Every structure is written in structure tokens, then in C-alpha cells.
Image (cartoon, rainbow, N blue to C red; front, side, top):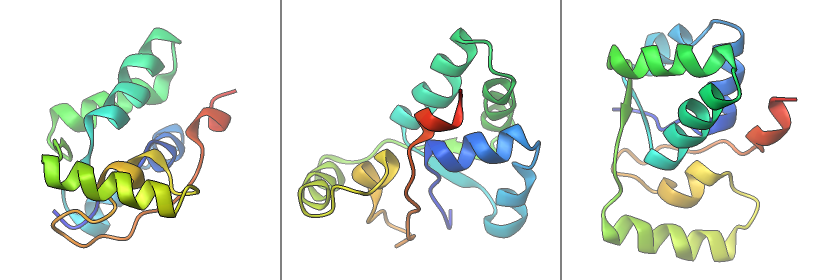
Length: 112
């Protein structure tokens, strides 16, 4: 795995039916359970088509839900305290084993 996606990135790409860009660029892409909850569970509850596209990508293992270790969660807490503008995915896994750089954004603004 070479990248970890945040909710904003997934929503934008899913809305454009372009999640395939992640796989083509990075191979399988990770996301944390909190991002899955926000993009799939909450999105489906609100009837967003992008939520079903993200869910299908997870089912096809193009997106992989990963669970951070307690050490990774501790690192995320420190990062959040020192860099409050990072996105939620970055808060949880900005220094995951791949060393991937995160993007920032507020996904709640994308679904209006």
C-alpha cells in the first residue's frame, strides 16, 4: 500500500466516478475506519451515490480499510495537537508505515 486516502479525496473522486485514478496511481489505497464510516455509512444514510461507489471499491479491495495500532494513534494525537489543520485521515495516520503524505480538507463541505 502506497497511499492513505482521506474522506474529502474519496468523495471528490467518487462523485466524478474516478476512484480508479487512485488504483492506477498507487495500487490499493488504505483508509481508516473513521473515513469508511464517514464516506460509506453516513453517505449511504443520506442517499449519496458516491457512498456506494466507495463501498464497491472497498468490496473489490481497491480501497482497504486499515486499523491503526495504538502507537500510530498516539503519533496521530501528537500530530493533531501540533498541526490542527490536517484532515481527519491525517490525524489518525499521517505517519503510517508507508510514509505517505496526506492531503487536507473538510469533506462535510463537499456534500451539500
